[in-house]
Image (cartoon, rainbow, N blue to C red; front, side):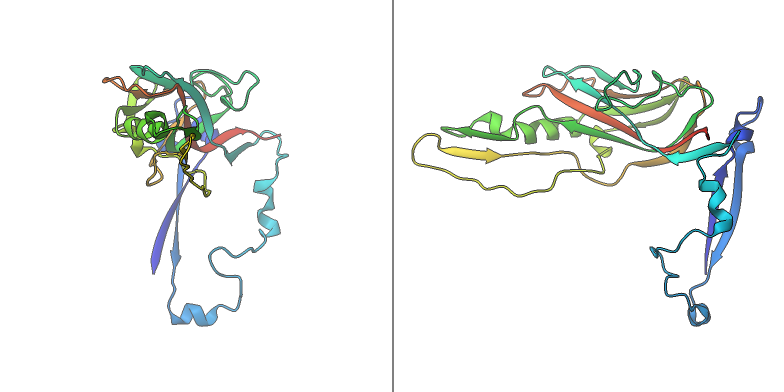
Length: 258
């Protein structure tokens, strides 16, 4: 038998003046028994994890986007792309600008905070270093530039440290930055060729940090509370071409329903 404890965040209680986060958390225990009796009693062919059973009609109300004076919670990551200088820099701060017309840069509703009446429950942090050198290249002989994507990605992933701050308090500090790999990548195949005359070598190279999805202890960013995610590199890490870093915070966004 397995015991599960789920926690629900009541945003209405949370926004009450004087309320603490613990006052807004409601817990519920559930039990799962997978023995022969339970298996024999199950006659539902879709009663398996991943089955596409419809939501019961009685429960549909919580998914309705039209609920006057109600708060809804949705899965909505927030991200911010920042330029990484070829010469390197001591720090890069993320989420400190608001959306200004280009959703490829950021989707933050405000600079470094979530405006009232919204809040964000952060569950994971990711950093995606995008090397600035061309993915494909052709040259008369092997060059350092043809290795730049790999060497730059390795140097950045193996250096620096990341801080997640809410208000004036550090809630996470960890190193190196490669511990926060993105959960998305590019798959493909490539053909390499060489000739006896120039150009002698064609190559394709792309690299990024990889590893376990960087889940963190969930932390609430209340409405209007300032926060920051910063990549620090006390020993400046130079790269062979100007690049970009996309920081993403995964989690649940709480906002007023329609």
